[in-house]
Length: 235
Image 1 (cartoon, one colour):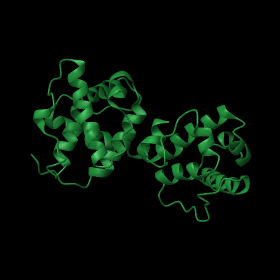
Image 2 (cartoon, helix red, strand yellow):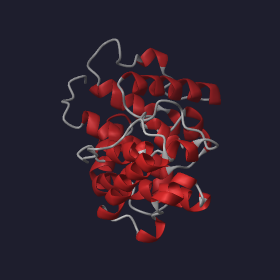
Image 3 (cartoon, one colour):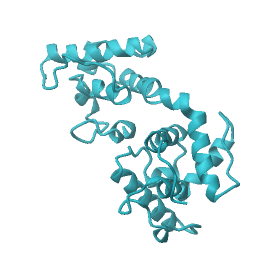
């Protein structure tokens, strides 16, 4: 749910208990796919249809894209099953596959560049940080460096030009010593992300209490796309 809500593609916050109802028109599915692949053509989509026939037509458009883009067939439901919400567990499995195939596709391809980019930024301030390798313990160590909020502060401090958005170093704890100081840092960087319209996939509590490497990579992917062509001239 957090992944979809972070994309800001629906007119209200999606909730577990209402998601199946929101999906039955097919519009939400198409929006999810188009967010991650903006060039998709959903011409003929009926955004206001509520009766069965237009809803099934909308869902079929999304299913056709899933087949074309390589979503494993065994996870793809029929339009009727999605409309009727008759196979709840399989719908959740399908959404998980959409996340892997659509949301994480470019992230996986760019992973080495993203990690090299963010590591080079962190090393300007902390030379001991190393680039994590795939599927090893170092990724957990790398993830833990973000719990202070400082790596995101470094990105924003270096790349944001607007004075009203650029973080103020005096508001951040360079060496936070308790959970409140950590929360302060994380709250400030999440506020900045929202102000510059970068999707927020990890909340302060997520950074502190969860280990979500895919969400961290997805978060860094959108920051990388936002700033990779911006010249650093703040140091």
